[in-house]
Image 1 (cartoon, protein in one colour):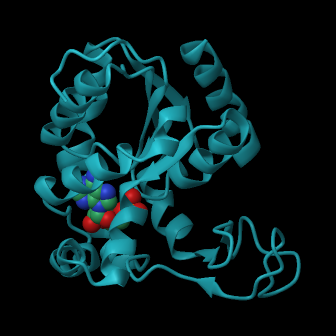
Image 2: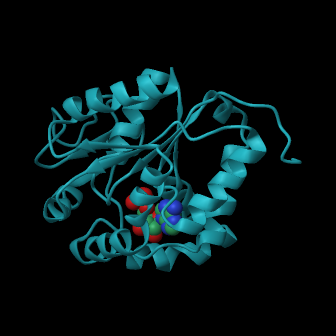
Length: 228
Ligand code: AMP
């Protein structure tokens, strides 16, 4: 691309917040409601690890330690995914950008596609609760529905309410020691992006310690306003 593409109104939304803030849960709800594509760099990296690609091999140990994968790898993965046809509907970025370098790379990519950032939404939570939130979570391997041992158990033990699947997965990095490092990485490298997007006039803050549907309603109103 040559940087002279025509304006493109497909929305770009960014979800910011520490691990456990509910970015993935809320991105999935927004995807269903607004027809946008959830783009999680964590999911893309986990797929790369599972597939044993070069990027996956480089990322595996870093992810297990709770550190951030290199900007170079993450930006390349995101660029490739954004170029796929479904992203033309608009995207919710879940877990990207996580550094200032990534935020700048995103700006450059969006100049190429003629898009702009509609909103960067910060899910505001108490750090102290995040370890409990993360330690209890699991996902249906069949359909991706998320659950939590205490806050959102399945109706029948071990069976997905959404698809009836029984292949429940827990992430390797959802343990107390790794979560502490993931929170530290968030505060050192990602939290400064809140000021970055505030400075651009794109930031919305949403209190995110309450019920999933209340947070979803607050998000929905920001998304409806900023993509109108
Ligand atoms: P998440 O699923 O968003 O919690 O991400 C899981 C892990 O993947 C993180 O702890 C990082 O190791 C890695 N990761 C995901 N997104 C990024 C990113 N934008 N930049 C660097 N590392 C990332």
